[in-house]
Length: 176
Image 1 (cartoon, rainbow, N blue to C red):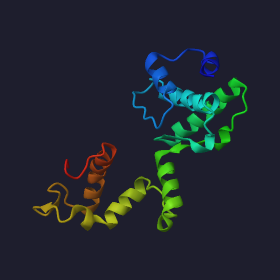
Image 2 (cartoon, rainbow, N blue to C red; image 1 turned 120 degrees about the horizontal axis):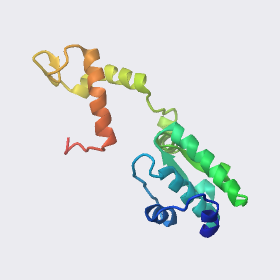
Image 3 (cartoon, one colour; image 1 turned 135 degrees about the vertical axis):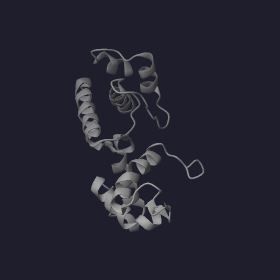
């Protein structure tokens, strides 16, 4: 039960954390600042679904943004599951980064994208460099790319933070 899970904790969750942990219908997105307990909430919600609601671990997906955070999630879920003393199939949980999850979906459901891998920083630069004309679509002024950069390589490095911001903030074409 959830009370049994809470009994294994050194410190009980606050009201906002408890609300997220006890939400068991559907998906849940947690947005909060550093040190606010996001990972702790994800761990406890996962255990609540597995132990108290008997949700099969293989049917659950827990995602975060970095490999480090995903590894920490896995470790903490195992640690807290062991404290419960129940046999939970923690190894069957789907825990990883958002890139891992999207790659898994693409490989499973889109045959032509089975070899999809997210771009690292260098790969992103190379992709933009190779597709420069299509990306900028002639946006030059006074011989400068976007009216700011003289060289193609400086323009590539300059627009990457801008493109990342558009992606991170999910800015749509109309707003752009």
